Amino acid sequence: MVSLKLIALFTLTSTFILSVIPASLQNECNNAKDCALNISNEETAEIEKTDEWKENEWNKWKLKLEDNWKQFNLSLIKEKNEWIQNVTKDWNEWMQNMQHKWTHYIENMDESHKSHILEKSLTWNNADWENWVNTELKGLIDNEWQNWINQIESQRYTWIEDKWVHWRSYQILTWLKSDWKHDENICWLRKEYIEWNKPSKVRNTGGWLKWKERIYKQSLEWLYWVQNKEKIIQNIKCSGWIRWKDDKNKIFNQWKECFLNNWIREEKWNSLFNDKQTLFLRQ
Image (cartoon, rainbow, N blue to C red):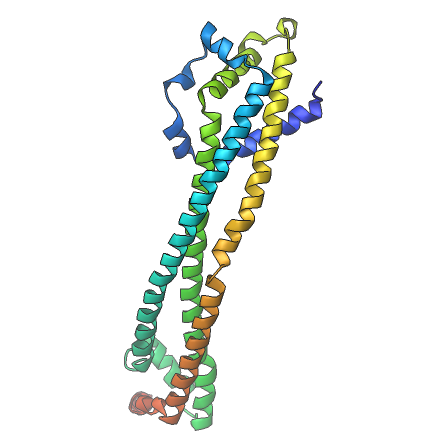
């Protein structure tokens, strides 16, 4: 006999499985039979297949699941590689925009920010300006890079995770919504919540306990399978991306150092001097 602890654990496991299935996807797989609690004699005979037959159906479904996974895995890797190519184009465009933006930083500077810099730089010499370039200006450029790369990385992880969750949810629903499985679940649920509404009405619970035990076992196998594939999904998320990000980070840092050195060498801050003199006159 199945212990109460086992049944409770099954309930928690089943609840978890259903909780990760998007509602929209469940609706796609639902049909009119979901509302039918009256099961015909033919349907009753169908769900009274032997335990060996039901176990065989589960094993066949798992084999098909593995085939489907191989196809999904290959398609995900292909899409990931295409994504890398597209984001490389975005990166090149972003770098061009960065070059233009920071080359014309002073002339396009917000007036309030410009006034702030002018006020605090009234007594600065070239060494002070070099320090400002290597700290504040450098920090502004670094922040822009971090914001851009973090956004791209978040989009990548979210995109892969969404596809993975949707795919695996659909797969388990093909099992839960199979005709005989659906009818069996409805039959036992009807007994639990309608026929067995009082302890005195509970009869012949052997089949019900086997049903509970079978679903509990299948739930554990499914969760174990998902956990193993989750490792592959995490690898897909990182594979190629870490190297791409490191390569682009090196290129960005090289460009940044060259840009800041040119800024210092050409003493770009001199373009602010006229505004500084104007500020003096206003004071």
